Length: 237
Image 1: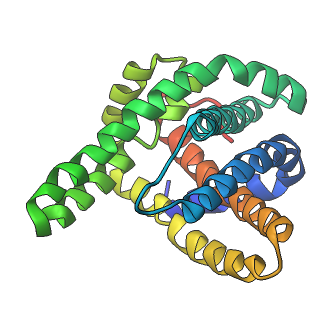
Image 2: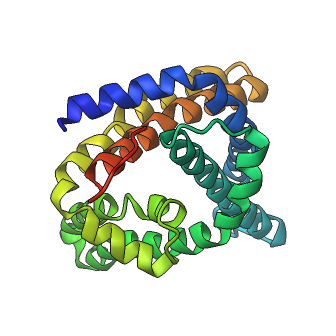
């Protein structure tokens, strides 16, 4: 299936289920974005010569990782059950998603380290950091399906990482093109956030949540690509 067809079907899915997606994900996004904004303000207000980050900041980081894992689990599980024609409630999705949070959290940590390793390694060699960045982007594309494999395939974190790297080989370029959708979304989100910042924190929070919600379209597109590329696909999103 062509990339344009995949994006079209992902767009139709997102549009047709936008109210259900909002009910499921927006409350989680408010918590996630709220923590991110607080941490951002703490960093901006920190003494650069003597920065101090204590237990509240560590707890906030851990909660942020847990909330993000819950978000991804809920979104992925919703897309999976809809691909089989079921219409579960948001409460049922959230309750079931809790089972996948530990696995997604570990998978996120391991895959994150794998993605950052090249750029951090080559950064020690000055200008060669650009090579490391390219390698990190490539690894990011190859591990883009880890979350789906944890939730859909019920794999362990390490098995999901290996599975994603093997699975994404033939579709690495398409995956990279889908991930590049984050670039215009980030540019638009950054512009809107700057405009909202001059008004106040409440509006900034709402804008950030809205941008993050529409950014979930990238996950929907990746899931569609994942479903049509699986060895056996009986149902479609």
